[in-house]
Length: 368
Image (cartoon, rainbow, N blue to C red):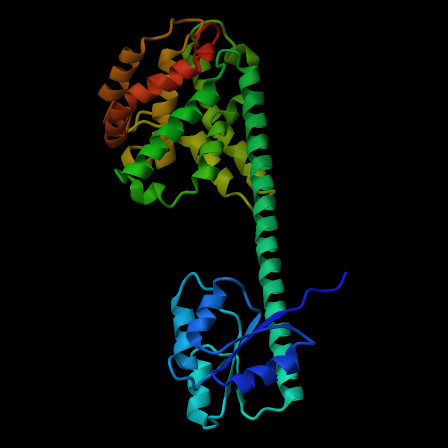
């Protein structure tokens, strides 16, 4: 198929120059001729030229004024402009190039030279557009690949979390629900720029929230006899169960050593190791106190405890949501970060809504 001819617009107030220029270029290009800048702008509403040959010295609107107007219009795609002029002083040439012209040819011009200059600038423009297209396609491919990696990462996280939950048949749906509670808290802090916004705003939430699924991954090291005991744990058994926080950290550290891209695993490690710490220092595994507990752990503590309270276990019935809410709020400054407890107070109806949405896992043989 024959390539479509490029479009050249010749702007000159001299009819003789327009005729001469069109005769010179018509075998190579589709040539449109206009006698003034005003006529040019009328034409630009109908066609998109590949290049403009623009006379400078025109009575109503000079070539300089034309290119200034084109550049000032955000809706006008400015094609390459070559100034054609009888002016040959360096100052005029510099002004034209400073305004955005790609070339400056003095009259009378050599026809072969004009054609070659046009060819060169059209080639440069074509190569520039190809490079832009290439970069846009490359960015799109990178974004698609990144999306696939994130999707794979999240799938692996979910699979690992489900493996743990499958072993612990007292905690059906806990991971899904706590992730939803955590997302609710984070979105509130982000959107309302309330407490800890300066920290949360620096987090990549697309990495952080999925990583919370691994907060109980250490339970994979706890024996079935303790994990699935159909009753309350003895003090000795509870001490063993508490080790799941440290086991979780170690398991995630082992994965981190095998990969360079581990930002999301760093969050997962913090969730696993600190979600049972308490504001007053009475938690485990390290007895951290106050803001020494990473914010991830303080957030997860609220999500984790709320879910445990309203869920049914073999040794207890599910607690009413209002009673669970009261325990969280009253636990400020002992179990929970007081600022986050206040946030929870505002979000309590939304927590209840999430619990209702995932209510299937809260009844029967379920818990945290």
